[in-house]
Length: 120
Picture 1: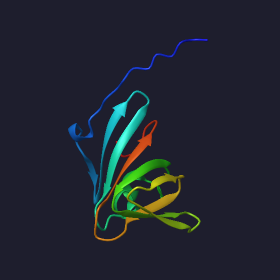
Picture 2: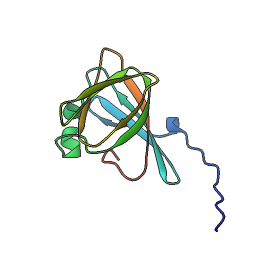
Picture 3: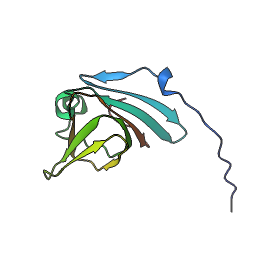
């Protein structure tokens, strides 16, 4: 069996420029095989208003695994089911959803992914 020798890696989100689409912004730090993205939904942000045209799909078709750090976000799946996530919640969202900020506080979460996304 081969030997796996992982190397320690470090990236700093604060050193990455934000990519902004309407009321939604993100910045991504790249590690070997893993992207770590800080996403901020400002008050009033909604995926279908701010990113739909850019993504070119009716709903967000990316899966997400994320930890909510601040605020609240609501998510609605294509079947109409909804869920709210708040500070400290870990969310796993399958493709086919819309999402929006709940309340007057920005929602900030950190997402972990592999591969490309269409915010890049």
